Image (tube, rainbow, N blue to C red):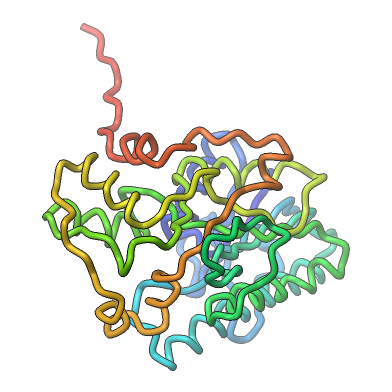
Length: 306
């Protein structure tokens, strides 16, 4: 399989690229700068340009492009950037796929469980309606931007990803784990909000599952089957890391550095992967504590012979 990836330099894109290449697939990474390697091709979402040669002979496209949702405070300017860059990137790649001859067979485009807003204790499957928060609007319009590919008859999957548990990056690796390791971890607000999560390993496996199954299209929740309340997740992290977690971050204290993004952290979503499991996907990490211990385990050392 020849796959083209946007956002390949991030945590998720890098892990997916490694997994695909380890199984012998060809991966082309779209970059905004001038290409510096044989596996790179140029694109510019601001102008709608994609190097036509990038999609020649391509079977699949994975769209992961966009700034991190928790990387900076959600000022009005950054909120516009989050929305416009995601829509521009998705529209650009979807339109390029529709114009290609022959067309790639599938587009798997990133989305987020924030699509559902903050509906409290409701169990959220893919049939649940979109919420009314800003992040829900972003996710909804992000998914709608795949229309050029879908209208051209290309199979389109929108992957509504939960928070990815990984030691090397993302919200866990960059923010939560460092805080807990120095004893500064604690629940957010009341701690009763639901947190949906997925291990990096299962995220990669789910994306590959969706790429390979020609009978699957539409939205899929990429989230472990057992979400946790924030307070329970905090206790697990404290136990696994052997650090106290007695601190509590009041809700208003999150609003100052994170802006509107804090409201999504304090609201949460109780997401389950109904369609993914119904299609036969089996999670390796259903339990958060087991997933966290696996993520933190040192890499296996290769055997040596004397």
